[in-house]
Figure 1 (cartoon, helix red, strand yellow):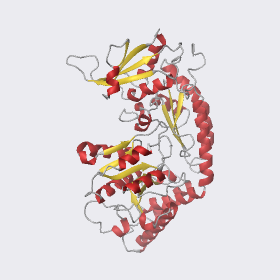
Figure 2 (tube, chains in turn cyan, purple):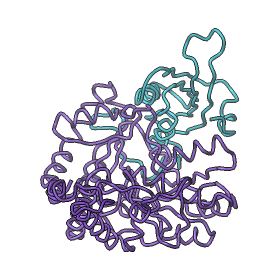
Figure 3 (cartoon, each protein chain N blue to C red):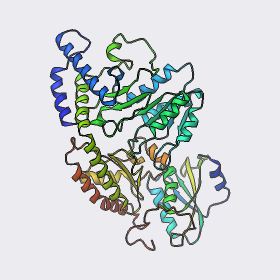
Figure 4 (cartoon, one colour):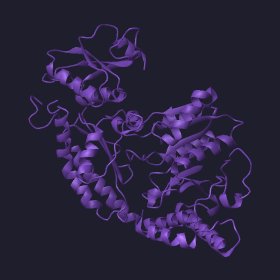
Length: 121
Length: 375
């Protein structure tokens, strides 16, 4: 996937990288959600994943959680890269979960958040 | 399988075992039983007996339906239009052809978030002069959403492109579609046996297969396939039984699915997908955030509840369901419930109730295992 909106989103460096290469669904999304728990302000997170399901699930998670999906690009393994080989990088602009979501970012159909006992949820 | 179809099948092994092409008494009996079965199925879906053709199963029927239309139109082109949520039996060969031959291009028409094809895009794609076949399912076998087949048939007729309607998931469960150029079905959807695919070919449809003419064409029809007579007989018996009970069956299944949709939607972070109203009566799909489909299926299996999943971890290819992906909904933690007919599974209402009750605890259990409780 090398769509143009995806490319624009990859212009600068991300604020944080969540490396979920080699992890199978739903772990890449769980790692991303866990990271978002810890962020202090709005930031751009890059998720690296090899699991094909991430292609659907990271945008779907963004929709369910009112976070902003920026795009995805495929990256080929480079010579001497022993860390993960081919993978896809996804970028998401995240807002801390305890802060109010930007107006209009959260669709009306979003199901109730979290379970009983969800901190701040 | 419908219990009465099972009885018919067993009895037919005695009465209808012979080769219907032969001339001895048992063969003539088999031939008569085959003709009668064809008449029952034809009347059921509203076509002439000669328009009922068979295939080894539903997926083979779907492939044949497209192949015959493409062959008949080979001088005009070889392009195809299909919704992005069609059965893999249609999409996989079409993508493969498109990859090898640019002229055999495939217009894969996107769907909305409920899984319904974008009709305007479908209609626009029909205008491509290279397109010689269009395909749209009646109802989706994974999420249940009904497609606008009537409007699609109208658009296809206007464009002069024959339309294959894939009714593999719907025949016997709801009113069959009326407008199509070829319709595809599988006897299992109405409680019949495996091994009986249907290709309904109205006489006006230009459809042919490459290769020599079958000397037994009068019997086998243009698809050149005659199933084992006891199977067809059982399929016809199942049709009659299922059709006689359909109104009540459809209402009850619809309500049971509503119960499951409610129960699933009440679990935190579970998304129920597909159209809540314009849908097949017996299919429901939902995805639970931060869970994995395989673990959910196993946890329910331990409770004696058999459900399917469209998640990547449960598929042989490790790719998620192309239907869920095309809808843009969550593919992990996916569960799909296909209700059997009440006649096939008399205990289904209590199984639905057990599933509705088990769902919140199973989802919580799997989330806890994955360390994803407070996300």
